[in-house]
Length: 319
Image 1 (cartoon, rainbow, N blue to C red):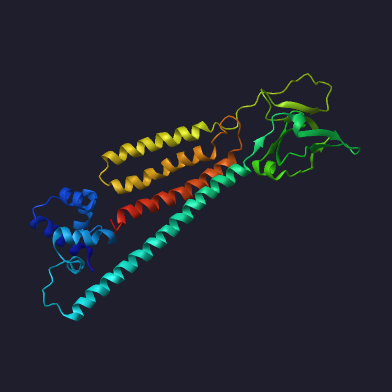
Image 2: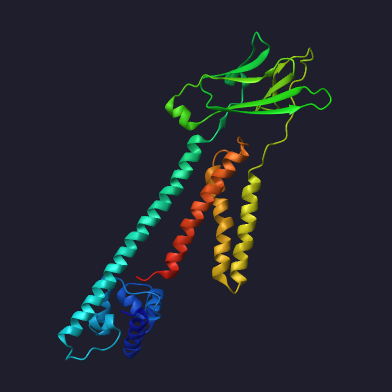
C-alpha cells in the first residue's frame, strides 16, 4: 500500500466530481487540512472514514487501498492480495498507535512524578530559630545544635574571618511536605565547632536578618547581619520568557522553521518547568542547587515529551 498513490487517486476522483477539498471535508465531517494531507500522501484516512469516503467518491474500498481503478474481472488472487495488504497496513498502524500511547503515557507519568517528587521533598525553611534548634555547649567545649523533631534536614556553611581566624557559622533548618505527612520525628545533633575557634553562629532565614544564636564574645549587641538574597528565582523565569519570545519571533521569520521550532522549545519548556517546580515558593526559597537540578530534570523530560508530540504531528499517518 502506497499512501502517495492512494492520495493522488483520492485527488483525481475528487476533481472528477468537481469537488473542492473543503466540500469533500464537509461531507466526511473532517477538516480540509486532513483531506490535503491524504492527497499529498502525508496522511491516510481513518478506518472509520474509509467506507464513507469510498461512497462519496463512488469507488470501492479496494480501489482506495490500491490507489487506482480496479477492472471488474479482478482475479481472486489479486483481490486477496489487496485485502492482505490492507490488513497488514491496519495492524501496523494499530501497533504503532499503541506504542505511541505507551511512550506518551510513560513520559507524561515521568513529568508528573518529577513535579510531585520535587514538591514533596522541597525544603520548607523554618523562619524561627527557636522552633528549629537549640544551641548547647558540651563539657569538652564542643558547640552543638540539637534539632527539633520536625526538622527534616539542615544546611551548614562556614566563614573564617581573615583578621582573627575565628569561624562564623551559618545554619538553617527545613521541613518537607513528605516529612509532615509521614509525621516523622528526626531528633539529631549537629556539631557547629569548638568553642575556642567558633566566634558566632547565625541562623537563617529569619524575618529581616540572620539571627545571632551563639557568640563566645561579650559583645552580644549585634542583632544580626543583613545577608544578600541567595538567588532571585524570578530571574530564571524572566530569562526563559525573553529567550522564548526571541525564539518565537525567529520562528516567524526563519526560513527553516522546523529547526527554529525545535530550538525554541528549550527556553519555553525551561520557563514552564521553572514555574511548575517553584510554584508557591518564589518568596521563600533559596536552595539554588536543589531546585535548579529539579528544573533541569523536568525541562529534559518535558522537552522530550513536547518534541515527541511535535514529531508525531509531523509524521502522522492516520488523519
